Image (cartoon, rainbow, N blue to C red; front, side):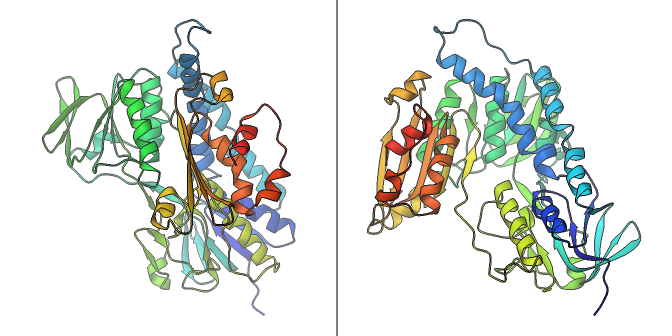
Length: 443
């Protein structure tokens, strides 16, 4: 039998790696992790954790505006202090995650990892071998290819702004665009969002998306649709974003046109590993076209949402596979998602569009939550949800727009995943009063 340096070697140290690598090593497997940047990858260092830290005062400001009169005073966000607080929260995460790996006797190899053959990875000129290799290199921001694209900034740069610019222009209409438009407006910026098409957040129920857009517009955010951005140029008083029949004067431009997989210079072509513009192609065991080389996390081309919980699930699945505890194909659970605007939009399971396309199979129940007594405790101004039931009246999908949408979807998730029927639902007793108890009351 061939002796390898490691049982499993991971390239990349994000959630697609460390959530499974540490318990795998604890089971006695020899594990290594290759990382050329910060341990932990995007989510802890320049993604989810940083974003929610910056958003917390935004959500609080929104709440205080809604209860104005009960709570008096002029509420302003000190953006520089918000940034300082964010750094306090996330600065120690790489060392914390590295400590978890170190305590599991995992070798951390700092540098760029490149595939040499199906069992060999070169790191800083040194070759390491492994029985199995996992590619977990994630995504990076897409960048516009237009004149002046160097004048635009990406999401990481936005989340590191020490001061919020007076005028911010955001190009794009996905998660990053909508969430950062919410933050920038709340911090006092004049915000313009430029959409290439006519819709934002295409994966979400469009009436709810339009509700969020209308709310942002009422606060001064400008949305311009169906615009092809052609150039960014320096102007007399800052920058100018030029597009078809459009010139926007601005101080700062965020390129939020999406994220793309990190597949370059890994040696994929040389080994015949299949990939495309959406990521690395895998089978139902997360194997690439080279059987002992796997992929995990956002770098995969997949139908499931490219989110941290998905990466954690995949990493954990591979842990069980490498530990010899399963040979089954991966079976994804219901994966919820949320947009951290104010209000939030969250969803899980069968979508409204899917249910509308198959009315004989599903029943759609729409709820206006604005009159719910518990929502009025906080004087919420916006609250709607849509519940999807199958023929046996089992909840199979839910989507909500409200300040507490993520908590509602989390509360309903067990019913969707485990297909609770009326008998099971009756046995769910939640704390009262709570948003979970109100959500279950609708079932």
